[in-house]
Image (cartoon, rainbow, N blue to C red):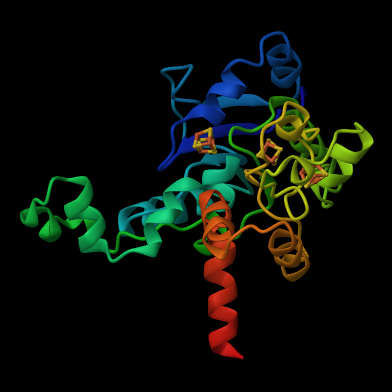
Length: 260
Ligand code: SF4
Ligand code: SF4
Ligand code: SF4
C-alpha cells in the first residue's frame, strides 16, 4: 500500500501574509515540496480546506482571546506546529503596541473614538508570539521568511533532524563578506545580537540590520549596549532600534528583572 504523505495546513493570524506569500512564490520548488507532503489547507493559494492535518504552519501573532482559542484548537489537531515568520516567532512590529495602554492605542489609531474601547474585538489587546500560548516545534524566522530556509526546516522536521536555522549573530555572516562595519560609517546595526541565516543581506547593501530574525539564544546585550554607547548612540536611539522587531526581548528582560 502506498504510504500516505504528511498533511500540511497553513494558518494566519495578525500579519501581512507576506511570509505565506513567500511560500506561494516557491515556483519550481513547490513541486519538490509536494513530493514530500500533501498541502490540505492554504487560503492564499487554494479553496479546499481540511482539519485533518499533521503539520500546522502558522503565520501571525496572537492579539485577542479569540485568537488564543483558535490557536489552541490548531495545536490540538497538529502533531507538529511551525511558527512562520517574525510575527509568529516574536510578535514582530505589532508587538510595539504593548508599550502603551490599550485605550491610548485605540483612541490614537481610531481617531479618538471612545466607543471602540468597549468593543470586545479590542479586549486584552496585547500582542504575543505563538509559543507564549502553545508549544511550538520549529521556527522559521524573518520578516519576511527566506523560502529556501522554510524548505530546509520542513525537510529537517520530516527527517527528525535538528533545525537548520543558525544560532550565531549576523555579524559572523557580515564579516565573512568582508563588509565595512556600519558602525564605522556612523550607522546603528543590530548585527551583534541578531540571528544569522539571511546572509547579512541588509548590511551587505548598506542598510542597518533591525534584527528581523530575532535574537540569538544568548545575546550579549550588555556588550552591545557598550558598543552603541562607545559610538555615541543615545539610549533613545538604542531603544528605538530594539523596539522595532524585538520588543519581545525588552518585555522578557523587564519581567525577569521583576522576578529577581
Ligand atoms: S513576518 Fe513580516 S512578512 Fe511575515 S507576515 Fe509578519 S509582517 Fe508580514
Ligand atoms: S555592519 Fe552590522 S552586522 Fe556587519 S559587522 Fe557591523 S555590526 Fe555586525
Ligand atoms: S540583516 Fe538583520 S534585518 Fe536584515 S534580514 Fe538579516 S536579520 Fe533581518
